[in-house]
Length: 113
Length: 114
Image (cartoon, rainbow over all chains, first blue to last red):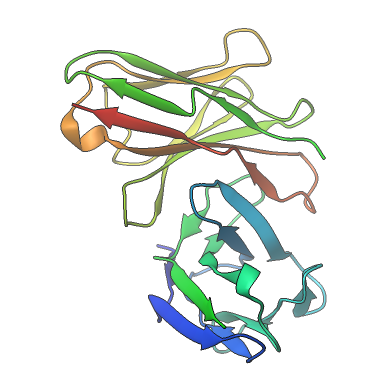
């Protein structure tokens, strides 16, 4: 059965520092991978996704994630964070198009001035 | 940008009462979902709906839950007899038919059972 593990429940970081939010998954088949962001009292917003092709995917606000099949990982990175990046970040996996998303436990990113 | 709309944003209900949570998915999407997030916990899959029928459901989605797409635009989640442990944020999501479409989530309905 598929599962997603986000190794860090909380990541405090100073503004303009780099950050990496870790995500590992388990699945017996090929997967589609997603990162969602949840700002306080809001819904889930798609940050980026890996469906196929290039293993490095980027979002419009400077985040990137790399699909590593051998390590079954999809870590999220940003070279320089802003205060406005403070939010909960969820990694998710789906085993087929249109299939259910399985979410990790979430990582709370807290950016301090 | 197209949105998934959920109403109400917050609902308080007494234990044992029935509630209906409403969602308007993106108009040309074909896959529909309900998820829930208990406070402080991860987002959990409840049910998926495709071609006017349930395609998959989780263990959480027991007989007290049901879904409908009554008029081709709305997608509803009904909880027949609410329990205290049903208190959670409920998210509706939809997805288009093409592989490069992501899953779009609504802003959620916070259900509080008292």
